[in-house]
Image (tube, rainbow, N blue to C red; front, side, top):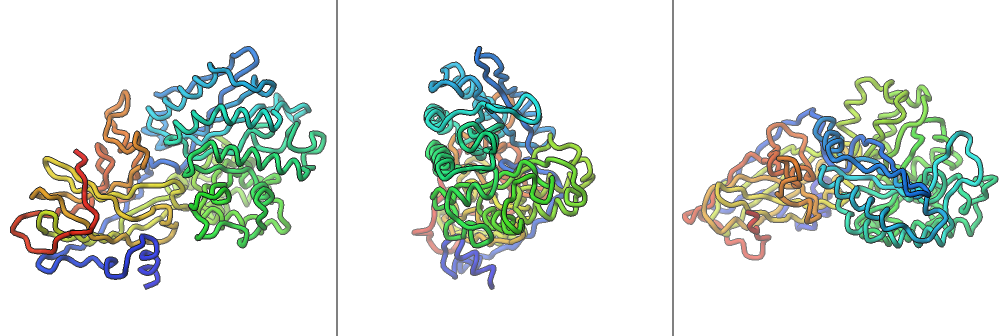
Length: 501
């Protein structure tokens, strides 16, 4: 009963519509769906490959992305995302970003889209030539950073469909916010004044404004978010269900841990006393915000698979770097395959109940139990669409459900009555968990491929014999017959399907 009430709250329906009841003179069928153990190439989750590019004072150093390589990541490795670090070395000392550089960044996003992947994005000004780093570190002052974000804004907005999340970047070496000439004491980076924090908040806010409201930013340590937004550590400081996805700044700032498992405090990632408080804060925040990062150093037993997997589950990790640190990752053995499956969301159908027969524009009842076997929920919006696929025409109707609320370890019931197509015929029912971006929610063919954008960017459910690779739909293995001789109620006021093709 608790799950039923939760589902009602989730999709905003009244109690009667939560029960899949066929129309008065027709029958209903309940089907179950076997799971699969396959590693699935779904977007905005899983392992990523690290990529970076530079732009030196003489305009050299930019290494563009390669479409074939990115496509191979997805088709051969089931890796659907890259970290793309754009280094801005030349512009640390000037306010205006060269048009040639902006065109290179814009072209990279086009390659990302054509390859059918997405990017975790970060901008930075410098990385050290050796260790330990020496001053000056080479980043830019606040006023210049804000001007640069303003110039990058049109590109970020135009390509937000293939941006999974943006890391706050800009400040300090690697864009990680510590070794910086302008946002803390260069001689002692641990000394950060109130003005320094205000400046960091200004960078973060400018980046949020540069992105659409449905795209999020990640900061490098929990304290950065706590300090900038004035929230306490611990569970009480984390994002609540009421705040989630409301578009406010605090609801759009998640976390990336780039020294995951390396030491008790992950080399300064956790600053609370006790450390457990910061972990509780991230565990609560990451119910609704993206969490990811990379391993950093072998630190047995904490970096061993049993501890690592438990912590990734607790902190709702959506992604992890496959390239670094290999010394850590190789100790995980077969655990790597488990991580490939369970990083982020892993959605699977458990059961479905459907109307068998109805009249044209008659009511069709659908009830789906969707289980999330992953470590996190989807953190970006998804369109949940019921598909009526006929031999001649295909129709779709959007269901009032939000996959971002399908929490890990839970089963959610999505139940709705909808209108049947007006044209008599037999229609296969399918579920489309589409990326809502118009360019990605499309059956157009990817450049240089037989795949479609929809199949590359829609969510494939972790069930056997349900995926339609040509369309990106998940087959519910049920057929609704629409016939003029059928009895049943008219669907007036219910969601009505639209012609797709």
